[in-house]
Amino acid sequence: MVGYAVTRPWTTGLQVDLVVPERVRVELDAEPGAVVAVIGPNGAGKSSFVRALAGLVPAGGTALLDGVDLLTLSARDREVGLVFQGQLLFPHLSALDNVAFGPRSRGRSRRDADLQAQELLDLFGIGHLSHRRPRELSGGQAQRVAIARALATEPRLLLHDEPFAGLDVTVAMALRIELAQHLASFGGVTILVTHEAIDALTLADQVLVLDEGRVAQRGTPQHVAAQPATDHVARLVGVNLIREPDQSDGDRFTTFLPRDVTVSLRRPEGSARLQWQGTVASAQQHGDAVRLLINSEPPLLADVTPQAASELGLSPGREVWLSVKATAVSRYGTVAVDR
Amino acid sequence: MRRVARRADPLGRPPLLLLAPAVLAVFLLAFPLVALLAAVDWRALPGQLNSAPLRSALWLSLTTSTAAMLACLVLGLPVAWLLARVDFRGRTLVRVLVTVPMVLPPVVAGVALRTAFGRTGLLGAPLLAATGFAFPFTAWGVVLAHVFVSMPFVVLAIEGALRSADPEFDAAAASLGASRWTTFRRVTIPLALPGIVAGMVLGWARSLGEFGATITFNGNYPGRTQTMPTLIYVTRQSDQDAALALSFVMLVVSVSVLLLLRDRWLGTP
Image 1 (tube, each protein chain N blue to C red):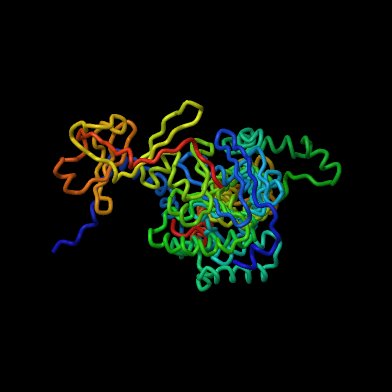
Image 2 (cartoon, chains in turn purple, orange):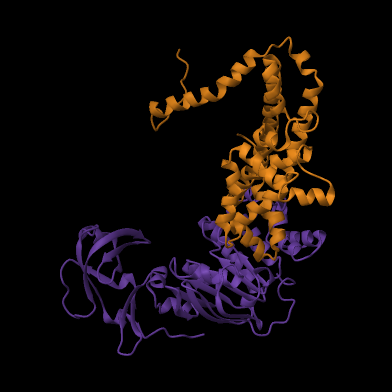
């Protein structure tokens, strides 16, 4: 990647404060070289956000990329590369022509553009497939072409919309490692929309959690995973999250691991606060344990041993009591923002 | 041993209520053509076809239909693109205006063309005064009538084709820095090409068979404005057999062009 993106001096990175009406409002500050993961449930506004940065949906506010407000430029004049969900490679063009499309559209000669495209495809290890049409490529190969195509225009901001969606698990894993290497040498800002916790944890140095069209939490991946502030992230990282409003206008959060939850058929004695009643909604093998989803208020996850599951008859519909030791929970206040 | 039957449809037999009308429809469409072929006097055919009026009418029909098709492409493709891709005020109105000639009786189209482009027409009179040229009773007039009648089919067919080409590809092209024109040329058109060709074939066929508007606007002058349909019409009044032969020629021409383009452009039907 060296030679493509790090050729120009970087000064200020990306400062965003934009609104897509009735969709999403995002404030974001990212340094050159930063990789920001954007996570959140469907409809949270993730795609609207990256499409607004790419200029494909109208937005208000500002998005300063190296000091220039992207929102004042048309899509084609932004130095932004977008890797679309589902790749969206041009089906009638070869892999090479797909990658060369950007440079050619920006006025490079055909020869130059082809050379550059071939170089990029080589870099991604698919140089020998350059003559193939997208339908003749596997999912992983097509995704590599899509990334190469976005990089070919030498963007300063690289947007990935669900880069691993729809890919085979092993392919996604290999591609994740590859992408991490490429991103490490990419001098611009990268924004990665994802619904996989692992993407945020392995690829990003900053996480932006969107919920219902606003930023619900931001921080390092470790911080967000350890102290989630939304049900969505709690589910992604597999912890229970209880949210209670506190005296001021913030929230108090309590998290604990499913394996620290004790399941019993009768009301447990002792601590009154950390116990819940509910019915088993589902029971699934999870590693060595059986993971139960309990319809309690709020819904909780509990891991039990297979023996316990069968002894207690923990099948869907069963009434149970849940409890957790005070020493096993972690409590924290409203969305601590650390950067 | 019994031959293995074709695998039964797992969803059950097609219902008779659908099957019977479908068979009748195919019969209705195919039978007249079979009857036409059966009525042709094959021995007399070479003699009947060796006539100057036929050659000039066929030539005029083919050239004017092709010219009209190209005009429909050059003028109609941009309209179709606007309708399919640009959200502008009055889009519905434009679509209505484009569609009306399709439902208009061709004779009315001919009369309307007269009042607009005739020698004394609204635009025709000033045109005649300025250049000495008038559309009616010329091959250009034939082309004009063809374009008027065929364009709606071409525009609607191409608009459908453009709509089915995912606009997300346009977005991808724009994000890669392509201008709208580059996107149109390198992405939209190639993706919609089969549909565009189909629209052109449709327009060409419509022009080839055009009768009412053409004869109303241009009359019926052998060698100048007499196309195959008008020739067939006038011949039939005096010589049924010759009209049959001419009709046979039209059938062969239409079907062979359709087949040729189908194989080359449209893949499997």
